[in-house]
Amino acid sequence: MVCLPQNLMQSPPEITISFTSIDKVKHIISEDIIETSINMLVCHHTTTNRITKIVINISFIFGDKIANLITISAIMMSILLKQKTTGKKHESENNICGTSHATSTFLKKGKNKMLNIAKSAKIIQKELDKQALENATSGWMEENITQTIYSGGCEIKMPKTDVNDFDACITYIYETLKLARERNKRFCIDKHDIDKENIAQTITAVISEFQRTQVNPEIDAYRYSRLAAAAGIRENYIPNKATITARLLNQLSKVRSEISDKDDIVIVMSRHAYDKLIYSDKVSQNIETSQFRQGELDLYVKSIDNVYIIPVPSTRMKTAYTFNDNEGFAAIENAKEINWIICPRTTPIAISKTDNIVITTPETNQFDPDLWDVDYSKYYDLFIPDNKKATIAVSIRE
Picture 1 (cartoon, rainbow, N blue to C red):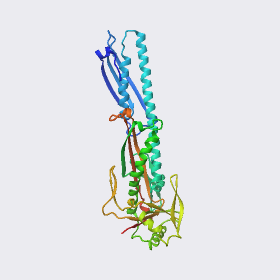
Picture 2 (picture 1 turned 135 degrees about the vertical axis):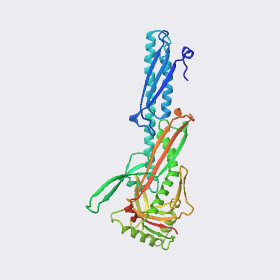
Picture 3 (picture 1 turned 90 degrees about the vertical axis):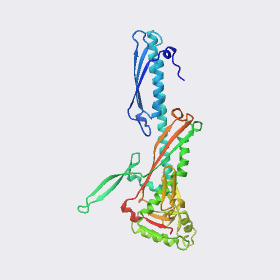
Picture 4 (picture 1 turned 90 degrees about the horizontal axis):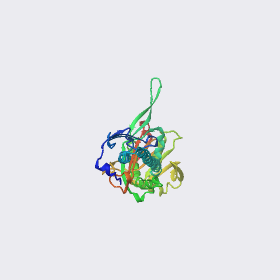
């Protein structure tokens, strides 16, 4: 609580405040752009030496809430410390020196706190992206992201190669594409549940559970339905133990005829079809256990004829879904179940990026001073080059 001197309360000066937003940061605040400057003009009455007018201009590169906090505090401190309560020159000089030191100390603390929040946000983003890659059953598709350029937001640049038939000239350009899906969520965390010495770990633990149970299944469903729709090799089939091995190997052969022998192939299979295959008497001699690397995680999965088989919950293997903004996903009424999808590992180009992590501390929370607010956004999409669609096979339960 700030207490103003009595003489200032009785005859308050005229205060004019102006703001210059150098660059209002919409997303996360990085260490190299935090900057604050305060310019103050103090007008004194020529006879009484009382302050009659204070003009303050605050230029800031801060999020709105932090800027407002610093603005208000700096103004109050300036009024208190600049007001000359005595006519003694040395006391006035001490007060002026005190103003400079106090304001500098306050701003330094605010800046350091923002730096810690910014660093925590970066750590959280990196960890959530790592978990999405490793925990989604379709995470292996993100290994092809090296073919793209991503600089944040909802756009990526993807390479496109054109060959001129006339002179065999090859043109290599980047095409800008927009990520179709975005998932947002605001988390409100009680201030007593946050370890201030390890903010990133606490917030990551909260968001990662939501991402694992809500976001990753949605991303899987989106990718598999898109991949199935693009498949150039298609069949309808109701799996049974007697015929499933032959039908699977037949489609696998068709895919191999479209690609190089060096290309790794992946089969993603609904749990319903997977159980039929694994417990089929005719497949036992062909099934092996293989190591499948996804991100930094080594998984042990079944394989057939040296091809990895990734089992997927059947709820994520439908031909069509509705994706409700920030409310999850659901298969449409006439959606069919996908038995399996076969494709080269390099065919789907998937991307999912955590972006726009904004952390509001209890001190700057304008709605509830007992809560940390964390705004989470996930952008994602799947891209399939036109010349790769012939290498995708799908089996639909029908």
